[in-house]
Length: 112
Length: 266
Image (cartoon, rainbow over the protein chains, first blue to last red):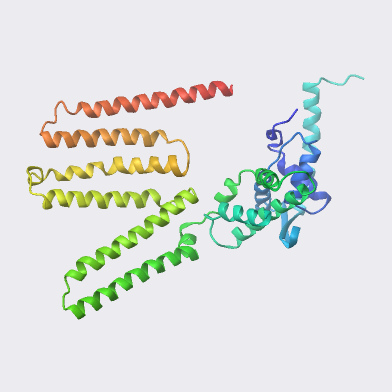
């Protein structure tokens, strides 16, 4: 069953920061990784990712540099900053707490 | 070739953006995204057209990014393409002046060349600007000055009509100076041009403001025109009331659509 890409709303930046915390990457690779991690059920457009990039770069969460792309074209690579790493860690803690609470609410508390 | 098709697509999508580094970087990113996806799909059994379609669809809607990159008025004026247009207009104007001085000097007639060359220059400049505006409006689907330029044409035409009616034609209407009522139609014409631009070039729905604006300005213009011609202001004012009635019906129709849409979302 396909899932609306709206489920990513509010989490796009966190997802991008998670991917970049592992290694520097570029737009298409990040989009592809999200689609694969979403098991092909979430359709993400490049425009969504690039809009997030611009916002995050303005906020100082990521930096960019140019490298070589396909067929000799230029490729813009993105790299996480210290501020981006800190924000990701904060959001990760928050997410773990929220997902535990939501699981309790939706699935029900786990009784041992 | 996919490379050429991608480049053409990107050039078309970014043609309204200013020619600066930010736009060049944006185009490079789009090109890299398309080529990367195409490279992944090369080994599939898809045809070139299908690969092209899939790559373009994967981009999504870049309106927000394009809006962020769009030029402010200073950038538009500094843009090479705009400067080139100004220079073309300057060249046409100077050629006209040289022609006029040359012909007038050698024929020793300074009036006839002035009445022919300068109006011809005006027509050529207006035709050039119109062609450029229409080309941008239909190929790019956005041209900020289209409505303004077409409105200027409407004003020029109405002014010529007024001058012709008021001074050029010797009839009862002109003698009573009722020709001024021609100018009442400037607002309906502006609304009509805006609606045509919205429907044909932008392919968007017309706003309620435009619909009501056209209705009210038309009803007022028609009322005043008829009342002026037959010199009867009552009960011809009912025409304005009909305009108000039509405007209310348009508002109710728009509200109905919004209520239906809200219900379907819930």
